[in-house]
Amino acid sequence: MVKRKIGLVGFGHVGQYLYEFITSRDNLEIAFVWNRTRSVLEDAAVPKHLILESLEDFESHTLNRKCDLIIEVAHPSITKTYGMRFLKHADYMIGSPTALADEDVETGLRELATEGAHGLYIPVGALWGAEDIRRLADAGTLHSLCITMTKHPAAFRLSGRLDELNQTAVESQTATVLYDGGIRALCGLAPNNVNTMAAAAVAAHNLGFDKVRGRLIADPAAEGWHIIRVEATGSKLTNGTQLSVVTERRNPAETGAVTGSATYASFASSVLSAHGKGPGFHIC
Image (cartoon, rainbow, N blue to C red):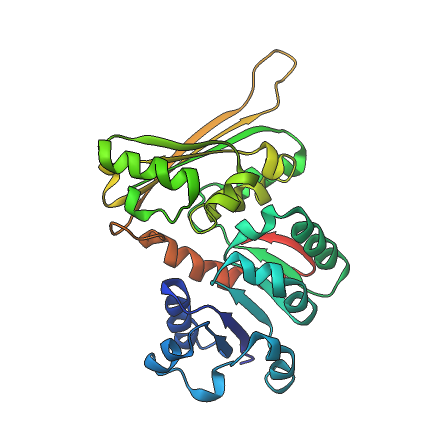
């Protein structure tokens, strides 16, 4: 059996889960693991020969241990700095697709993924109906898309005005709308919390980051849950009617957790799907 060799960038909760998943599979193998803090890898007993000291060295490392897929589950800054380099050497799965809200980053990666030898994969994460959204976008019949994410205030990692509003929700113990608008700006304000929205913008490529609407709500009553509501409409028909779809996903989550419990398994499924689709942008 030929094993797919995978480079793992990031060893937080999701990275650790994927490491265990990959090492448990007969058809997958770890090529390297990188984490900003090496001691975390050592504490987890990751074999020394798999630890990549610096991402600057990944090219020389992959010459010795061929890498089929590189997975980022660290921070959107990784894609901005290394995404193009990764994609020149292997398929690349972006676990923090908020990085694509930077137009230059998205344009550069799309061009390379289209013209190069490798594919770029976007995991659906907590997004429900991603494939249906993509099909509507492919047909040019997706008219609007709104993603509403409701979480307990402790689940957010925010700054500036959004953090102030989040504290207001805590103090008042009432649901508070932190943001309502195009998701391009939101990705920069809450890069750790809205990867689901970024994945939706990639799937809804005829609308993109500016026209897909994002609503972020802090609700103290949402303890134990991440609630994601997806509202999509199709183009109006000649008789004035249009397709309308509304879904709500209630993802169990420990209070304060950035990632919902069911999303881990979704990432594992994406790893298995991120294979064999060739060049281009792929939802997985």
